[in-house]
Image (cartoon, rainbow, N blue to C red):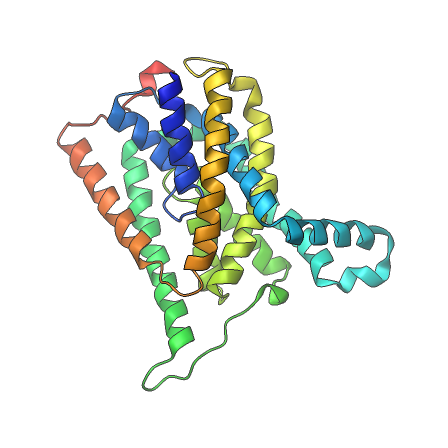
Length: 290
């Protein structure tokens, strides 16, 4: 991998990680369209450490408060009813599905799941799911001629059951094209949470999963055509760009619909099917390089 490739892929990772359009799919597609080797699951997991570092800094006050309350709750029974302490446990509970499934399906994630036809399918299907969830949220928030405004749930109403559902939604992002934020936010909206609550828990929930995945894949960073230097460079690029994107996205969702992302996902999926069907792209473009 050249330094230019690592710069472009780091930029793509930072731009797409927090948007509901799938960073893993865009890394895969960028390489395929450019005629580069597929950067692979290891490169993706490690560069995600950069974007998660952006989450740690952006939500640092929340994280410090949650971690502090969680540790206190281990020895102080009176703290176990504290919302922040409960959030600590809920992040742990919600992280279990992706941990178990990630290890179980590791070979598929690094192989068959990276087929461009599967990515096209997940882009379209999850785009439709996000669109439905967004419309339901908008209907509750605005009401209508014969419908009263319905109050949506905040994170204070999050329990173990919903935390696990969020976790299974996040685990779907093991398949490129699904989108970690897109799947968890869609799940949250379908369960009746506000856009801001679903997005906030989505980002907090991703921290242990992404950091663990990145550390687990460190041993593979220097294999094949991907070397340490470009990988670290891409990770720093992803961090800087990711911080800007997350700050923008958290402001965006307070007043805007997810429909632009829905339309983008569906159009990109259709374009990908057309290009593969026409023989312009091979379903396994770039994979032969390692």
